[in-house]
Figure 1 (cartoon, rainbow, N blue to C red):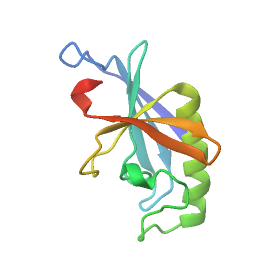
Figure 2 (cartoon, helix red, strand yellow; figure 1 turned 45 degrees about the vertical axis):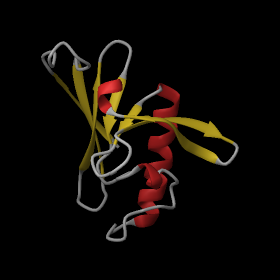
Figure 3 (cartoon, one colour; figure 1 turned 30 degrees about the vertical axis):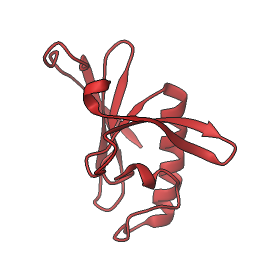
Figure 4 (cartoon, helix red, strand yellow; figure 1 turned 30 degrees about the horizontal axis):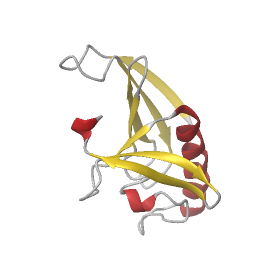
Length: 120
């Protein structure tokens, strides 16, 4: 994974102070997850790496993924980083969950605290 950083102006007095992108080879080369953050919170748009909240387990990949084994390894790495840093995940494609936190359980990393973006 590679990282790029861009600074943003404050968005409506809300969450964003800066943003960074993390690229990985997936369904399209160099797809990125975007992390928007301030001093205390990070919101990560995970794109097709985790398109919906039910796709959190690493074996749940998109059917059109061109490198599913690599995607599973990358998802494992990303999820561990997200749990360690307390990132909130944002799902554009999920019809029921906009934002979700993660927690490590005995069955692996699972989602918790589903809510809408406005509640963040």
